[in-house]
Image (cartoon, rainbow, N blue to C red; front, side, top):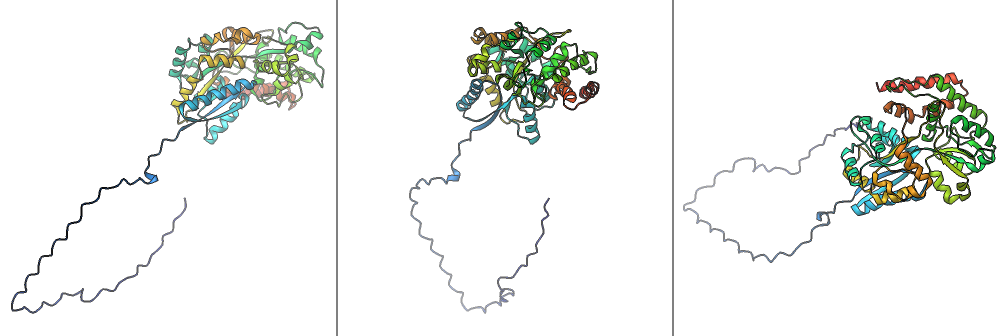
Length: 469
């Protein structure tokens, strides 16, 4: 705190006091006759009646000011469809105009949501509402960073034919401590995108059913430096968590059935690590796969530099227009399995409201506006999502597009995200810290042994699970 110094002010006498005023005056000598009484003062002449008052305009500062429009900031998740991104932004601004709300829309890469929102929390400037995935929503709900929306979830469901069973399962309040913290708007899951034109020439006409078959096909199709077979991210982004599915295919698990004890250190993990590190050593991954941002695998495939990638469909939408020849030579199928398990994970994308927002009611109204049947039908036609509401299944795109038909099937029949692991806060933190791809990086970048990489990851994993006991 600043210190304030006191000042002494000298007081000066500004007038002299007459001595006579200080003492009593001597009485006057009595007169023979009393003086005549003085006449009473005449009353002042009455003033004229005031003229009628004229209206005086109020000063500018006295004029009531109209209430300033409210403001709302929304962070949307970018996907690889400029049309879908533009539709989302336009819809939010349409709502703002209708409600007289100043809306700021910021579109960010979905793979950067965790970093950007975390930084915003630290800086104290969270958006009022934003898109996010389920894992991150679990963490933010645990830390009271987002607002419960149970009533809004019911209202929207009732207005649009009800929520799909898979949506209700993925939005179960029990998983979030008894309340729900987001409004789903789309389901997505990775499909295997493959260069059928290249693989057919190598003698492979069918999609690989196992990760071992994929490795075999990848070795035959690999043609560096122009073409690398395995366009799978091994970096610290959400796309790299596809490696969890490979790990599970080989029988590996992140934790036990109780969701309390980490189980990374296992023979099954060693088998997975041999698969991925052998492929890396054979030069099947593109250079930079360990440092890619969220668009790395997309760009590799779209530029004709990758044979396989795992993608929900954004690449398909882009190459339909940008590279019709590549689109014609591409095919799509479910992710391969392993010797122990095959998973087809489907995940929900949510819209959440910040607990720190000063316009929560407006944000809820916006989320309801974004759930309109017509809007979602048009949006699904340009985006890469399966439906979350029963009315959403009627969108024409689910009959017109083979890829979208697969996404609809995934929404209706896919396995829950992170299956068979227990989907809890500890697993969410494990995923948002990208510990499986980091385990791979320890070997292929840091040159550590597989044993050391597994043991270090086991310890980091268990430290996370211990926090939630």
